[in-house]
Structures are given as C-alpha cells and as structure tokens.
Length: 90
Image: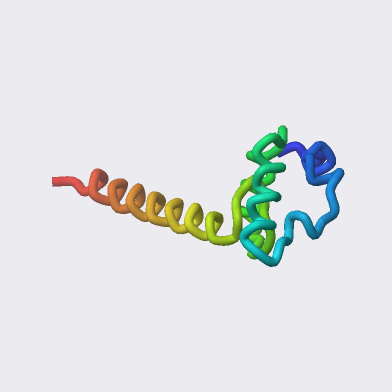
C-alpha cells in the first residue's frame, strides 16, 4: 500500500473533527466527503487492518467497520472449514 495515500485524501483539507463527529449528522457529512475521495479504499483498509475504533474512515462509521470485520471473520471461518472438509481423505 502506498504510504502517502493519506496526503492525497480529501480529509487532508478538512478539520480533523469533521471525521470524528459526535452525532449522526456529522457522520453523514464525513461520509459525503469520503464518497468523492480518491483514496477511500486504502483508507478503509487502513482502519480495518489497524482496528481503528473511532471516526469515519474510508466512508464507513465505527459500526459499519465492525460489521465488515465480522463478515470477513465469518467468511474466513467458512473458508477454513471448507478447506478442512475438502482435505479429508476417504
């Protein structure tokens, strides 16, 4: 991942508090900015891989990121189970 992606984000030109809102309206404002951002995907992956709990990252709220991580865990568990089942020899 390009280490300079943060400098290219639209958030670089906004006050940090924009992306750490205290209410739902603020979350929506941040998400609208993120929607147009050229580094939205690496931003989201950064937040997910570093388990960042606060703020809007990559256009996703804390709750949305928790859901994404949960879905990824379930998929990984399912893939692991399927891998074990197919490796069993009869």
